Length: 120
Image 1 (cartoon, helix red, strand yellow):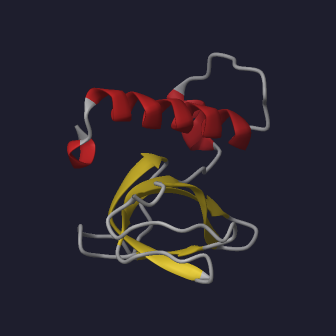
Image 2 (cartoon, rainbow, N blue to C red; image 1 turned 90 degrees about the vertical axis):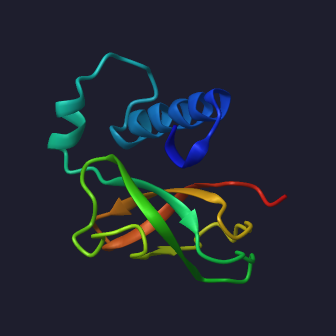
């Protein structure tokens, strides 16, 4: 279990990841896809933990304990304490150590959030 999530949380995260993978491919209709097809598109999706409380007024935030969900880790991530800067494009909020899933947008060379665990 990643980050010590229970089975139900892991299943919910997997469902979100599958939905995001379909969205990234530009398809809203589910279809079977081999993992290699997704990876060949250069897609990068990561999951990590917020390093501090996130406020709606924060323009960016950082995550640590970064793991690759789709594709590979960014080269600057070599250990669990390395951080990745994410744009707070949706003015979200979250608690320190909340889970975040983010995707790399190649056209802007920025990491954008797909999901942030709601604050307690």
